Amino acid sequence: MIKKLLAAVKKEALILLRDRIGLSILFIMPMVLIFVMTLIQDSAFKTLNEKGIPIVFVNDDKDSLGIAIENGLRNSELCSFHDSINGIPATADVVKKAVADGKFLVGIVVPKGATDAIKRNVIKLVSQTLNTDSPPASIVKPTSKDSVEISIFIDPITKKSFLTSVTSSLREFISVIKTKIMFKTFSDQLAEIIPDKKNAPDNAFSQTQIIKYNEVYASKDIGKIVPNAVQHNVPAWTIFAMFFIVLPLAGSMVKEKSEGSIFRLHTMPSSFLLLINGKVVVYVFVCLIQFVLMLSVGLVFLPMLGLPTLALGNSILGILIITLATAFAATGYGVMVGTIATTEQQGAIMGALSILLLSAIGGVWVPTYVMPQTMRQLSAFSPLNWSLNSFYELFLRGGGVKAIIPDTIKLIAFFLLTMSIASIVNRVKRKI
Image 1: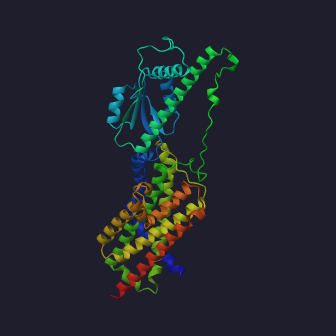
Image 2: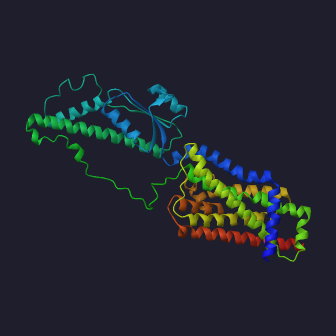
Image 3: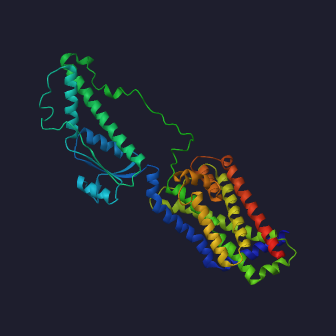
């Protein structure tokens, strides 16, 4: 039995190695696909994750408000801050055109005199509250406006949630500056009424924050490892490449039928499954090589282009298990398609279109979390989605072997189902 299996494996390996160009395409093209798709989708994923969104900022105020907003945006992970375009300091007109051209999603312009307007408004409010005389003209010029109009230029493709985050941040910055000015003005007015400087509430504002926030993630690795184009595309297109071996595998089986070699193999004292297992072993090994090459892209080559490094999580054993399960599922599917198809054209069309459909449904092209509810429910029937979810568990959620057991069982069951279907179809065709 073992000798027959080794002979079948040797036969399949020799057939595969003879087509060196086809074999190199099988390895190189998926790597190129990861490069292209990751580079294309990097900006889109930043938008989806509301992280690193390109913002251009103009600070014509040059005072407390403008400086506070600028510092807040610079230090925020929400956006990628820019105050110049092509090395030239940005202006309101240039910003409007740049956003209209799609170079930035949002442009913010803080007008000249914005801080003065807030000061004037606050000082009037304090004076009315304390029933004191009007503030000295030296504090604020009488020509200053009493309102602040911050211009926000928006690209139409900007997500509503991101825009809400930006405007909320701006309101927070304005509120903080206004409160600081109000506190200082009250202090100055009280200091004139009560000249006891020891009791003056100077510098106390920084100690008045009562409510603080404590963000706790449900998984310890969430927040440290943020889903991005690399974390999605490397496992997604690796799975796609594994399942796409349906083309050479099905083509090989159909070719054996058309050349008549399959009939000679049937005359041997061996079962169909034993002969097919030779193909399974070889192509599972091919899938494992593909996986290693794809990981090298995420770990070594994509970071060279300035993209994030692929984070592998904490369970190497989990990665090995789900990779093997995916490889067997992909090979089993290829055997089934190759058994059902009667011509090479049928095998190519059936295999290619079905894998494209299953990958689209399964979240390879577009992550399932941005799909409509109906499509998310439909994606649960795609074996590519089972594998991708397991890689998400390992790479993003810090899960281990236990977390991927359900999807692993599904993939193994899918492999057994496809091999059973292939065996039944082969038995029916032989009778015919």
